[in-house]
Length: 336
Ligand SMILES: NC(=O)c1ccc[n+]([C@@H]2O[C@H](COP(=O)([O-])OP(=O)(O)OC[C@H]3O[C@@H](n4cnc5c(N)ncnc54)[C@H](O)[C@@H]3O)[C@@H](O)[C@H]2O)c1
Image (tube, rainbow, N blue to C red):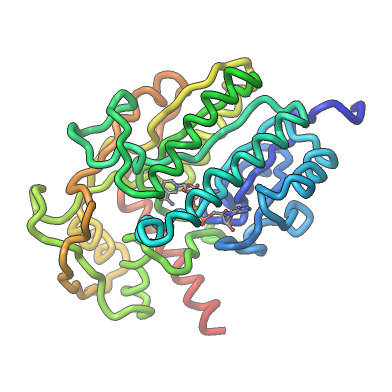
């Protein structure tokens, strides 16, 4: 390969030491592709990837990113790196605009310089704000209600502009609630602080927490608790692989929701966790959180049609079983 050529087997995974990124790195490796990770370890874990894959640094550090791109010549960038705590974004919007938008701008500029033309972006259901229909398809208006959602939508606009001016073809994937862990139990969710329902419920079952907080039990839903669309992390990563194939085959810029289309209430998640773990899981009732929509469920038909994507693990029980396996492993690690 001449030094200026891109390597079609190499994929840069920005944020590859995080929860979803590390599963992606594993899946790329399992497919015989070559993942290269850039991560500043702000929330990620170096041991989630192989040491030789990791380039530790910030996606917004242009000289650093230039160096990595020059050395590894990836043909595509998958961009998972972001700050993603909704609550924190409402009190520290600057962190979100800087990390999620400005640093992404740096990454895109380095890509343009290196001649890399394909990009897969981790967006979020938070770009829709409070939905006025359910399930939500991609034509639903985007009106985020917090700085996290704003910063993600801003990147979507940025990608439109870089597509028109610099020819970058991108696939934006708007995830609903990522959940679950690698089926072999070796990778899983390790956020600090943890804010996601499924790992929190399982931490109660494993004895790391006393009770699970239920934020509001009088929402406009069948059982009064909030309903969300939980999508297995392996299914999210599989959609990225399909997006990669589509872009490699010359596919054009597009945006897809990723969810199962099935909503599950907080009470249903707790019941499923009791089933899977055999633990009673005490519940504590807390006031509803401001800006928490009662129901967020994806219409992901577009991804199914265009990418040929179908979730392998659409049910709550396999998501919980895999996450429980991971939680048992994490509890043993903590005790060691
Ligand atoms: N987890 C979910 O349910 C969910 C839902 C919707 C969207 N998303 C999006 O998916 C992506 C991955 O989410 P996650 O749950 O794996 O998060 P995570 O915090 O586990 O992973 C993010 C990774 O990016 C790294 N990172 C952050 N900023 C960086 C920077 N400026 N330079 C280099 N590395 C940086 C972190 O160290 C971490 O390893 C995020 O963009 C998030 O907004 C996640």
